[in-house]
Length: 487
Image 1 (tube, rainbow, N blue to C red):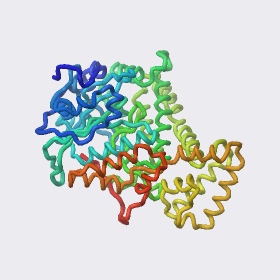
Image 2: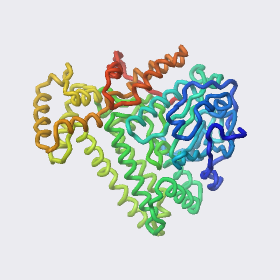
Image 3: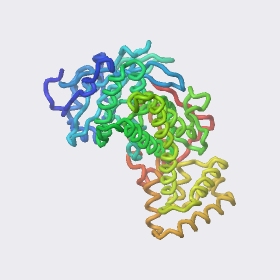
Image 4: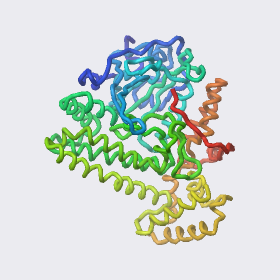
């Protein structure tokens, strides 16, 4: 144990006070020679942590799992989940929750180590993680935060000094992940399948108090809980779609009850606009393709609703009817959020019935002419049509005139409209080829400068600065880009 709070740790362990069937107490396995690779200074300050102390040998030892701060109760959480539609018993196979940091603002945030060794849920794995995938999660999660999308965040990546063996040896690493919590749809599935109704009630009450404290403790408490989670997920998935983010593994164990994006394994951002876009090497059927994400989210929420049935009503048929009524609102909620966001991307500040047709016509042309999703909206924002098949097409020229006429029918000024577009269309996203270049430099050459420059550019995606221009270019490769569930 560390003997003082010089680093600023201020732990509580409310989850560890829940029934012990929800988790297993276990300490991280020490590593040989931990070395700090990257530390998130702004996030550390927000958490109330001392940056200099975290960079000390003792601080790095904590981030590597070699030391545990006072007040922690390290646990591996149990959960289940539907993976590609099939139900499995799962759990933290390569993650350990140290506890919950209470920030200076009074926020309760999970501090989790990813890659600290085996747990009872490792299912034959070594419980370790490779440096490349941990740096990838750091880059993408911080980019998502800068884009204004609810997400888990990354505090640090520490090299372990020990190799991990996959198809070959890779340098090992541990990521410190920060989350509102790690309670998932799969957590509720686990308790509903393997626990008692009382266990389920305890979990639901805990989650409500932690994430939805405004819900009153009355007879409709759990139905309101389902409604709130549905609304939060509708808003999250809309934000994904609006920036072209493809999660890649939308299993139920990767959907948080808090409404944060979690698990950055085979995720990527779409270049060419195509609803069928899939990056994950294991998603051969396109279950989690870009265009399917809203439907999969609805499917996952239905699985969540199933777990709550015993709490919704004593009569199962009435419970099912209540749950279906709430879940049926998801697509309308999502569509409303998406349509509002698309209007903003086009600078539209009021509503007209034909707006959706205008939006869909643009997307159809983008798909037809294989236009880049982000750069198309960036060019419209800057009013600088690019020399591409899309912008040269006569049908686009006609669409452009209709769009300008639409903007002219609203009372707001052209300046206000353009400001809305700048705040809604990122000039820069973590382009897949840029991320890969940064990871290769870091893992193969030990050069962190490429990643540092990329992180700096991504920290202000709506800045439209000259320094970001180089990160807007498209990749030179022609073969399909593939991502993998990194371990």
